[in-house]
Image (tube, rainbow, N blue to C red; front, top):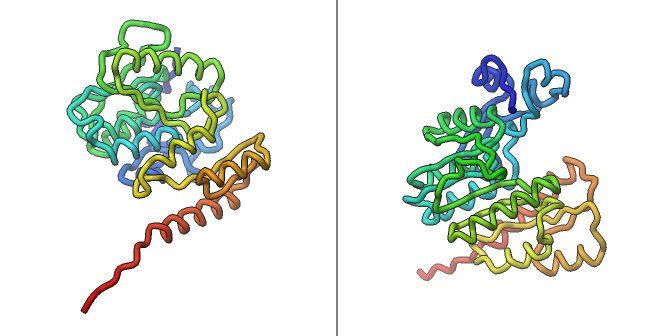
Length: 265
């Protein structure tokens, strides 16, 4: 059973700070940063606080990707029932609510995560429902919905297998299922396959892509750039290197997007 500190909301406010996620700057969330205590929390400190590992304190890229996608394609959820599996910080749930969903349920087995999701929604003038049911276990409480969203759930082999199976079963029922993933090792597709699909997106909506791999080859790097990746990075990474590459990638995209205008006087 998930653990809770004596004052869950107070714990979150004391140990995180309101931050703007990079991909969804429209929102402010209670998140860990290098300036707050939870950033350097040890297992012993978390045990003293009666808190499980605070995954909810980080706005993971898969969740941000789902949130950005829903905000940019609001028609997918407008007037519909949405459930957010393994909601974490709740950023995807918030995007669904902002995009006009009729109802949104954020689900996570970590009850402190659900407290954080509600706080984050409230900080942005939104309201979401929450559920701590273990939907993967087949427990009652998996609500009917038109749309199922999930961000960054393929970080561990067993979790990924069970989550993908569950998500596919919902898709087989006719639901729209959206999974956001930054290329975790246990997602059953390769980064190159995903990159190829990205190139099918119209240029105006297409994200700039930097491929990252812990076991890449020269052949993979060449294929990645041919498929449209701006760059290919191998682990281990350093923050300065990633920052420079991301800045260059965004600068390159801005230049690509510039369309010369000819004025006739």
